Amino acid sequence: MKLSSRAHYAIKTVLELSTHADEPVTLAHLAQAQNISISYLEQIFALLRKCDIVKSARGPGGGYMLNKPLTDISIAAIVKAVDKATVKETSMEPEFNKSDSHTLWLSLLELIGGYLDSISLAELHSIYKTPEATNKD
Image (cartoon, rainbow, N blue to C red; front, side, top):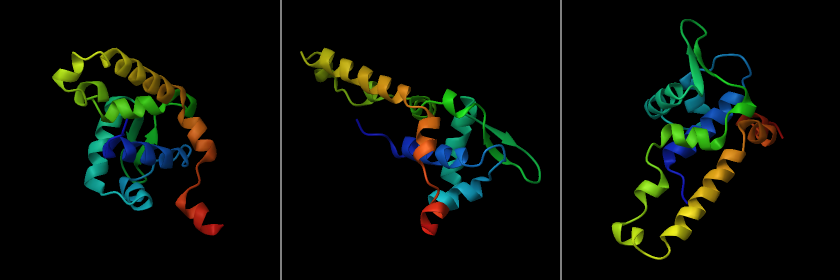
């Protein structure tokens, strides 16, 4: 299974957002910290906001914050928020659906989905170092 670039960037930026406890973070900051274009982040954060993973704060000092505790956000939830088309829907050709290995493939996808669902943002947050922290070492 390969994560889309949108899912990869969503995970990276939500993880970066998790390092800023209860303060709003601008997309400009996230874009610079993770080397992602602001316009691409706007698309990603619109999807994350629709799924209640992040919330926005308007006005001076505004930006984005997590909308749930770290323990309540799974990596699978982030991936599902930005990638409506799942691997199951996009990677199987019609001929593959009729093959004997179709059941095996579906079982594998369920295992991968279950694994991603079992990893919380809190677990990743505990081992993540911000780029600034890494540069200080």
